[in-house]
Length: 304
Image (tube, rainbow, N blue to C red):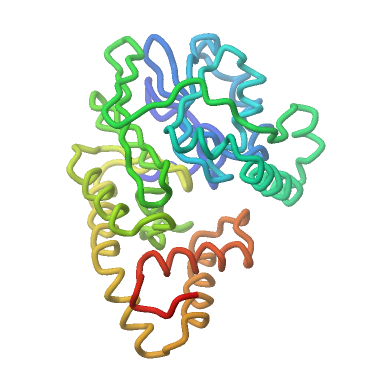
């Protein structure tokens, strides 16, 4: 099963946002939003909230899965729309949001994507411009958010992609919201994308193994939707193989060409083609890939 477009998944989960930039509403007696998306999805969110049967006043909090611009850009809009929302994030994400340079970069990337999508005027009308985030409460591994009605959201610290990455696991539904700590599916849904260990590759592997030990029947990604049924096991197996063999396969490619720039350009182009996330332009994708490769290959390649 692959659910690619926003809509109701089941009684407890609604898929919000867009195919490329996903948010989720988890519902018990109360609700929480999982993921912070980008500002360009605000017009879609506006329509989704208007059509929602769940009382928005019962949405009590929002969990920011990590501080990258494509996972937090819609948070100011959501906070303005629902002033009662409590914003939750890891302690390090809170630190990131306190830095002027980080806030400026997040704002620039979100404004650029709103322009590419042709929704700049609409985002302005909805007051969806990114202008910073005030984290109300930090969360840590093992924290439980009890929504009532037998639904609990368990916080998982899953560093590696970033220092601040957190996932959400719902034991009662065997549903996992892994953020980019799990290589999200490629645009065609056939395989996991290139593992993005921009902070620490060893930590990325440990985080993935931690999630692989859970009982999971549903994977709800921040990019490209929701997978269930047999595809969950397939994706775990494919991703585990890719993650565990990644360093050796990259080293073999590097030994053959002995050119870090060429390797980075090749992998960036391949990743961009497979993911089709247009908010990662060619220049930014290359910067990300260079960071990623240096974290994975370490001392095996010349210093920058």
